[in-house]
Amino acid sequence: MNLRQLRHIIAVAETLNFRRASEKVFLSQPALSRSVANFEQHIGLKIFERTNTSVTITHAGHQIIRLARNIVSEANSFEDEVRGLSTGTSGQVRFGLGPFLGNYIISSVVKEFHRNNPDVRMLLNISNWATLQQQLEEEEIEFFIADIKEIKNDANLSLELLSSPRIGFYCDKNHTLYQTYEDRVVPSAQLLQHKIISVSIPANVKEEIKQALGISKGKFSVHIECDDIMMLKSMLPDTDLVLLCADDAMRTTRHTNIRRLNTRLNPDLLGIWGLVTLGNKQLSPASSRLAGKLREQLVDQPMPDI
Image (cartoon, rainbow, N blue to C red; front, side, top):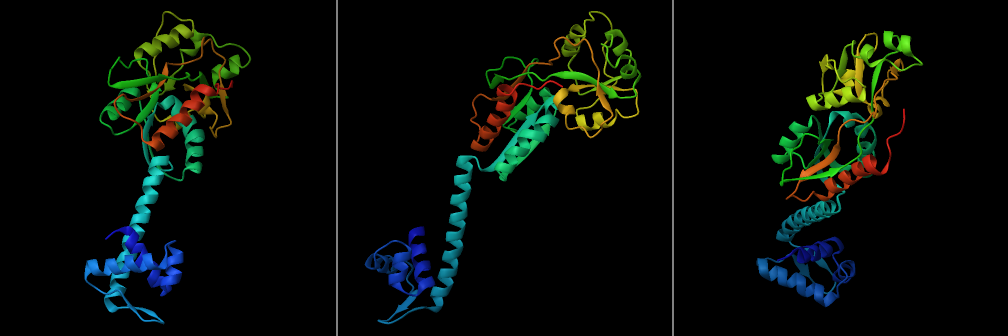
């Protein structure tokens, strides 16, 4: 008993004619008759009653054909699913992104990938690199993209360097800093006197930001720290807060009254961003395709000026 034989008896049941059924399954009529007869002999039941002029289905045959249709339908679904998994057009992708890039990538690459691959389910977690690394090692996600500066050399991890995001300081258009220095560079000392909000930033990265601002001494602290960039952006209107974030994360903001401050950030790039996978694990086809699209966005296309 095999799927081929099940398809043969279904074809005969649909046509009630061995000649037409043989054409439907691309088989000679004698070969189809032998296939059906062998199947009937194997199960010990007659499925069809044959005469010189007609073919009818037996009572047992109706039940067998119903079961055969269910099995063939399941087999076809299985083949389609496996084909989709092998080509990356179906299945599931579990991945993570660092908060600086999360909002921008969600609004561009992930949306495009979904439009082109609607049968792929995506499970995305936006968090800091330490949490994402733990999830990767526990195989809760297949890969992540984040700042890899603090990730220690680990033979179990595979790291691919990508471009770094351009960052800036943002505030409400009525903020004292913007009103005072709209067309001028904001002195770093003045900037750091205001309350900064941002995603979580490691201590050594804060030191890099101070160096980029040209301030070797002094304190750089984050007043409100949250890895939800959308929530941070919503805090800016009508407040004296200053948001530090990736420029591309601000491109989708709905608040038209938000302004980018002209600061002494030099360079205005943050972190060393990379694609991280488990070295001993091969990405699923769908994950590999999505990771490739994210790689193209962060490597092949330069970050636009703002």
